[in-house]
Amino acid sequence: NAGVTQTPKFQVLKTGQSMTLQCAQDMNHNSMYWYRQDPGMGLRLIYYSASEGTTDKGEVPNGYNVSRLNKREFSLRLESAAPSQTSVYFCASSASNYGYTFGSGTRLTVV
Amino acid sequence: EDQVTQSPEALRLQEGESSSLNCSYTVSGLRGLFWYRQDPGKGPEFLFTLYSAGEEKEKERLKATLTKKESFLHITAPKPEDSATYLCAVQGPSGNTPLVFGKGTRLSVIA
Image (cartoon, rainbow over all chains, first blue to last red; front, side):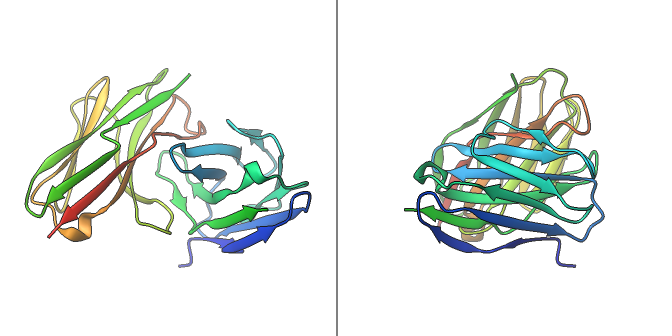
């Protein structure tokens, strides 16, 4: 089982460029999440999707958009990247009442 | 607002020196408290879920306990391979409520 797969693993963007982070899970989970992790800040929720067809904002949604393409896939888009969006991005999925399964992360640097 | 505070931020132990990590929380209706382990450059890995005060769970050298205000992760006779960052998270009353994470405790076990 692959679990949660994130692509790309590393990315360098210039300020103002756009990109989409991809996430796919093969566990038939209903819920999917995007977090960012910064030194000293812990994991902060950007957006989540409780079920296919729904998305909701988390703690730090500004500058991001998401798409729940189908039950397996949940993408995160940066329309105009800023240096403040330099971070490690984690996608996760879960079935209700169970712990999350995380992907291995995308390390994004915006210069 | 749900909050999770972990202490200490960093802990350095000699191999075999037992200790505990603390996770204090405030949440409106705890559905579950979660512990994760995160190795450098990787996504968090699920360890335990605790649901009610008094509950305990064990896995190898780790034991997690829960009270109404905090959780402890006890590490007995740690080995260097236990070195990692340990994350605590809480979930509010709904099964669809996203987890709120603490900033983690970085554990180093020296041989």
